[in-house]
Amino acid sequence: MKISIMESQDKPREKLESRGAESLSTAELVAVILGSGTRGCDILSIGKRVEALMLQHRQALSLDDLQGVAGIGAAKACQLMAALEMGRRLYAARGARIASYRDVVPLLEEYRHKKQEYFVVLTLDGAGCLIERRVITIGTLNASLVHPREVFADALCDRAASIIAAHNHPSGSLDPSNEDKAITERLRKGGELLGIQFLDHIIISPQGEVSLKELGFV
Image 1 (tube, helix red, strand yellow):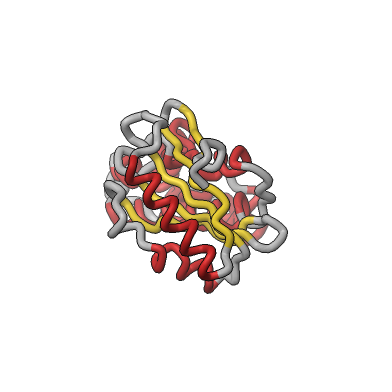
Image 2 (image 1 turned 120 degrees about the vertical axis):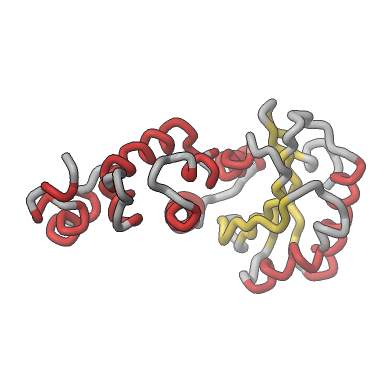
């Protein structure tokens, strides 16, 4: 049913106000975030298309995927990506207990199939619980892009006790490159100087994942 002909109390925003966000379908939640549709594209229809994409791509959902939906331009796609990332940060990841590199893998799934390399840093508190996950750089990794000052700046602000680094290999290979090993060693030494333990460097790809600590490089 088009939103324009719905009873007022059944419209997504009014429904949220009267019954709470939990009463809305995923398509209705999308409609509230976006606010309005476009000529020929009713907002609930857009919401259903976005919901289908979310179910299809899950953590790998991209800005390009959303902009492929009729009625969603760059601004609305950015709104949705921001909302999704906020939800992931606040409810899915923060506070998660990290006991081994296997506990980190679910927090990296959205990067597994990326076509560019994403270098990610996770900051942990003294109990080994996640404080924050951040992308430090995007693109082919080298020592100038992944500098200790960029990596540890946020860790210092977070008052982190330790960090874990991770990046994806779009090629699918799980073999650490010489650059990967060099970056790992620089970060280990940087952590020693700052009193922030560098726990691991994880590589993830469509073929699996590997821990440089378990390979003996940390």
